[in-house]
Length: 174
Ligand code: KMT
Ligand code: NI
Figure 1 (cartoon, rainbow, N blue to C red):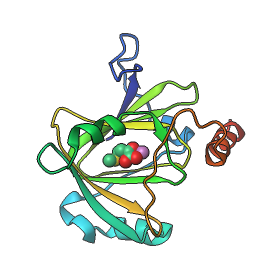
Figure 2: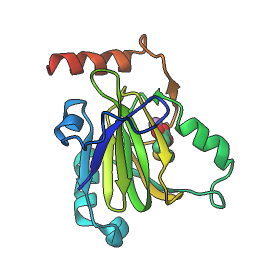
Figure 3: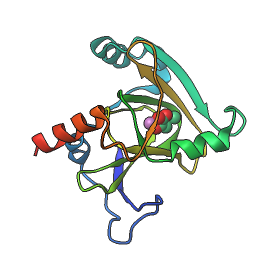
Figure 4: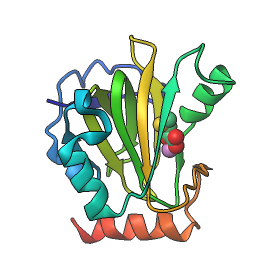
């Protein structure tokens, strides 16, 4: 099962937050999660169903490791800079692993450890960042509705309508 815990501003483990958090913590902030069979690759039945139900027509694969990704260092640096998107961020881990950090309701970092078979959807407007784990490599499937837009809007984005909508939904749900 997915491991989720709190980390500090630089991604460091916290003395007083060593325990795993319940997955309801993710639900609260609009993050969705599935565990699929990575061996079935693109033919995974549940993956096909999620794609169909949610309209994810676009798909590509991204390998993050020093010899397979151009401008590896710079890209990793950008992935770890706190940002949001105007659309959902949909990622399915096929190999390796990594950490998605997302901001909780108190603006603290929650770390989500993604491994083979884990699929997550971050809602539009959520602040997040990504970094590799000890394996130092990951193969991700990226999904999108229609033509993909990967534009990262670095924090602060409090005037962005998508951010405002996300924040409004958060407070409506409490
Ligand atoms: C992004 O927007 O691509 C990220 O947040 C990085 C994680 S997936 C490469
Ligand atoms: Ni992102």
